[in-house]
Each structure stands twice: as structure tokens, then as C-alpha cells.
Image (cartoon, rainbow, N blue to C red; front, side):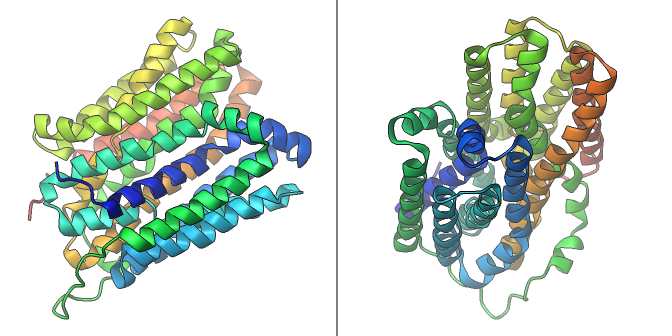
Length: 396
């Protein structure tokens, strides 16, 4: 595997911050309810706004990557949106301040993954893209872990506002490092056409990748971020310590799965085949959760760990989709694909709440969660079946 340059390392730090900011709100929930009068509904809206802002930015981010390169695109958005959002959060005195802060953070984080992906797509061999993408997601996902227990320790030691000011400074520093160390790929010559979203939509090879893109990461993100804790508490009687251990194990499995996707693609012969295996295991695990929602806690832990590991096919899907993008569409193309993935997370998180509310009113806890797991299973199966219509990755 090619070595990571100083510029790529700075982009990894930026992506770690992106993963951190999408997960840290849950840890802050008790203190925000107490000191900012934020209800669970306020916090759910704030979290959803992060994903909406992130997804909405993907089209302009793609255009900026193609026009200006990843160096300035990532650095300035991370510094202004990410650093500014963390500062607004640190000064929050009302729930709507949190909504503004999370929207700014979503904007600031929006190019953090696509910047290095653009460099991988332009400067590295196509066959290496899946491995590089998986390693980047694996290291970056450690930010998700840092947004759990380690953040609790820092808040207890320094207070939440001081912690947010520190995060604002760290985010500004990360933006400065990107500006100082990243080297943009060479500009395309005049012989390359100007890219557009319309040209991406005309790439028939992408049509049947997009449905699975929209649901694959959404399943594991929603279950780990929203539903694992209440399932463990209400159905399995787990306390806070047990919930923390199980969700940490699932999070670490997701990191391990990201590192495993590159070797899996080489072992199975292509990103497409590896995606089918990973998605097939996800379907099998969700089927177990649907039909056996009241398994013993030890078995539930194993189930969630397996789901987290095999729910890490995002880099495989990105590698498959990227193979069909000509050079002048790389920036817009990878961000377009990412928009489907992140947009799917936001939609599934919002939609899962009324689904569970309706099921909770009609069934006991175990059966209510079974209906929720079925809600995640059906679109995953549909996306999986449509994915069979895609061609193998193109090697150029």
C-alpha cells in the first residue's frame, strides 16, 4: 500500500473530526438538557441538521474539488464551518444555538472525506482505491470512538464549554495543517470537458449502485447511534455500563471492518463481490435480529459486532462507483455518491423514529424492536438485489 504523505495525514485528522462531530452529541445530551434546556427532540433535530447540511453540501463540494482542488476546499470549510460551529456550540444558551452550531459543523465537515478520496482517485492506481479508502475510514472512525467515553472524561475534567472551545481551536489547527501540507493533484488540461451532475446521472453503471449506497451505511449508523442502547436497555435489561461496552465493541468492529475491506476485495477478486458478501452477511444478521429480538445479551453483543464489521462496505461501494467516473467527473462523482450515503443516514434516522413509535404503541418491547429491524431489513434487501444488476468495476 502506498505511504500516506503529510498532506494525507492532515486530511485523516480532518476526517477524524468529522466522525467525532457526528457522534459527540449523545454524550453531551444530559448536560445540554440541564444547562441549555434542550429537549430530546431538540437534540434529535440538531443531529439531523448535521446530516442534512452535510448531504446538501456534497454537490457544491464536488464542484469545488474539481475547480479549486482539495487543499483549499477542505481547509477553508473545515476552519470556517467546523471551527465556527464549535465556537457557536461553546457559547450556546438556547436550543436554537445548537441547531445553528450543528448545521455549521455539518457544512465544515462536508469535504473531510471527499478531499482525500479525490486525491486517491486522481493520483493512485484504481486497484488501490478500495484499500486506501478503507484505511482512511478506519483511522477516521477512531474519531467516533473518541466521541464516546474519552469525551466524557474530558468534560468531567474541564467542563463542556471549555471542551468545546478546545475543539474549536483543534478544528482551526486541522484546517491550517491541511492548507499547509496538502498538495492538489495537477489540473486537468483544456481537452477535458467541464463536468456536470447531468453527466453523472447518464452513467448507467451507477444507477443500481445508488440504492445500496443509500441504505448500507444508514443501517449500521442508525442502529449504533440511535437504537442499540434502547434495545439493550428495554429488551435485555442492560445497564449503562453494559450498554457502553456493547456499543463500544460494535464501534470497534466497524473500525476493523473498514480496515478489512481492501484485503476482502483482493481475496474475492473485486469490490463488487466483496460488497455482495458484506451486504449478504448484514441481511442475515438483521434477519436474526428481526426473528429473534430477545436473544441473550451475550448473543446480542455478538450479533451487533458482526453487523458492525460487515456493515463497513462503504469504501467498497465507493471504489466500485469511482471506477466508472472519468477524470473530469471525479470530484462531482464521489461527492454525489457520498450524498446518497449520508442522505440515506439522515432519512433512515428520521423515518425510524415514527416507525418505532407506532410499533411501541402496538407491541411489547421485543416485538416493537423486531418491527424496527424489519424496517431496516427491507430496503437493504431491495438495494442488495438491485446491486446484482451492476457491472464489475472498470479498470483504467
